Every structure is written in structure tokens, then in C-alpha cells.
Image (tube, rainbow, N blue to C red; front, side, top):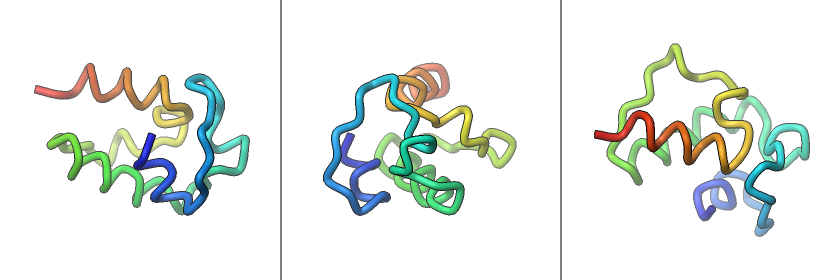
Length: 71
């Protein structure tokens, strides 16, 4: 996922279910940046209440979240 690579600054390709935070690819400081990129790229508004690393912990979870919240 290009957004994860852009935010992390690392050209890695994590497995869909790999934890982006446990692996060190992202940290809690990168979460707002990633959410901002997701909002721009997918035209969604992610409420502050959803800014939990757990919701965006893997590519799979990000995709699921976007599917559930896109209009």
C-alpha cells in the first residue's frame, strides 16, 4: 500500500495481516499522517474517535475500515 510506504518512509511491503505498529513500520506519531493521507486518497472523513492504532494495525484492517466507511 503506497500510503503506508509514503508515511513510513520505508519501501516495505508488509503482509496484509502484519501489524504495521508491532513491526515498527509505523508508530503512534505516524497514525495522524496516515489517516490524513487515507482521507485525501479515498475521500473519507475519519473521526477523531476512530484514531486508534488498533483500527489501522494492518493493511487488511485499513481496507476493511475503508470499505465500511466509504460512501
